[in-house]
Image (cartoon, rainbow, N blue to C red; front, side, top):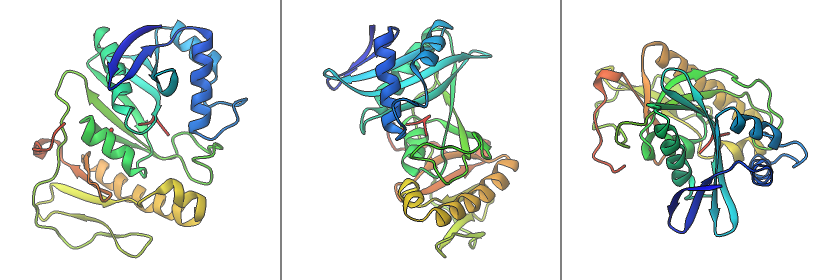
Length: 270
């Protein structure tokens, strides 16, 4: 292993050896609540990806494995992050290690997918990293049987991260809002637009993972409701540019996206 990043007492390294890759596979099993005998990414698959030119990064808090990610080279000077997960607060260090690896190979962008109903991941991706949601994928993986996604459909959003630009969010300014366009499964407002027609705002539940465990039918209704809003907006050319702390997406037409004054978020993640 060679050191890639060291921040706040956490070391992030590329992993190539069999034992290290097996530990990463076990870590992913723990994150996605699968038996270690059936990990989402088996060690032999990780080894093959590394052998083919990809990279596995692992974050260590002392000697403890606390995060990991997998990325492969993509076409047109891009990379694809297959999976990333980390203990709270360490996701940024893992993604920066991926960025440095990719940029060192000449990549200009990185793409990955995440569950758009997981608001904390949306905020990490769109606000902390400054990536942009560029595609909505319906039931991308088909049925999933891990302990996090059971009982739901596997819709995903693709985000694209500009590796050459600054990490910045694009938070909405003050807007005059039109009446609600969609009602959420909880009876409140799900989505609305600004009067200028340049932004769409869409709400997601507070904790979709907990909701899937306690009320899977309601969680699925949220899936369908948010899907409808996003498919309409993406078809019109909107892109996801921001996520507020109280669970509201901002979708923006690209040429009208204002730069935020807020300072410079994992999955895929799941």
